[in-house]
Figure 1 (tube, helix red, strand yellow):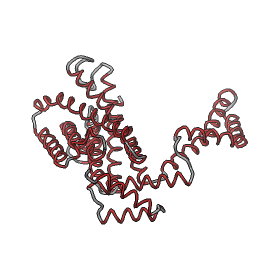
Figure 2 (cartoon, helix red, strand yellow):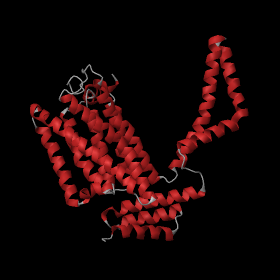
Figure 3 (spheres, helix red, strand yellow):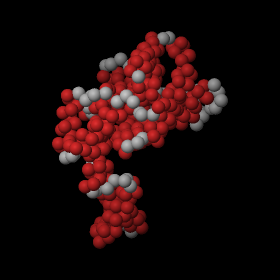
Figure 4 (cartoon, one colour):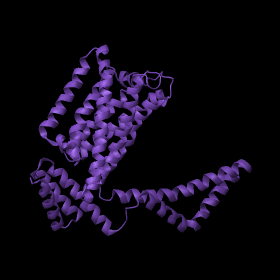
Length: 374
């Protein structure tokens, strides 16, 4: 069953992107917490359900290493709370996370949660099980709170750059938060026997939840990590939207030719002969060259529908450059001031992307004004 191993690719997706962020992204607090969260999420899914039955014998023990203990799943659960709450405080602008912005509160949650995670590791199995349901309740509250704060930050955003960041955060982490909230809520209901067989979604659970719970739990990571990657790339590559839109357009045209060849050749091969089917497929595909303009117009409409606010114009590129610069500026002001290294990075961006120095100075003054006490 797919749910017995889906956590393995999900974990490697999360860890692969964590490595990318660690190597490429500026070393801000937000980037460090994002790396930690991706590592924890990867550990959570690869140790969930029956994944270790594949990981330990085929990946770990073949290398002569000690097998991964299942207790690490519970450890990663509590570590997620410790990292995610401070991450919400430093990333979102909603008043819902205002208490988390205080350095003392963030440190207490971080170190307190990590201490619980370490404590869980050394508990006996029968004692650890007593913490399952309390964790389900806590994580449901944390994830639902994070999603609500993200939506609220999107709603109250006052600038386009701030709105863009909040929207990207909501769509990316919202996928994981919603799917995991539902999963943990159903686990709680199943634990008390309100639904299913009361077996908590174990692999031998004959009810539909035996498939649904692990599937959506592991699928959440596969879905949300690429969305986070896209959000990070939008900060680093001002024209990533244009690149994706061009790729969609070219792929649509290529798909029309490939589909025509296979459909015609297969139909002719079934009713005539394989050799004649291949010839007709090539001829019909070649004939599409005469209809290239309508195909390209269709591809253009499709790419516009997929990315409606992305335009291949100098004005749009200038707008995206300023957006990228403003996002990096906000990250540089994470600690309330711009360090010498961050100043060099900002100056380099202004020069390499051709941003007007007056515009860059105005953006910085506006950002500093928002940090000043009222």
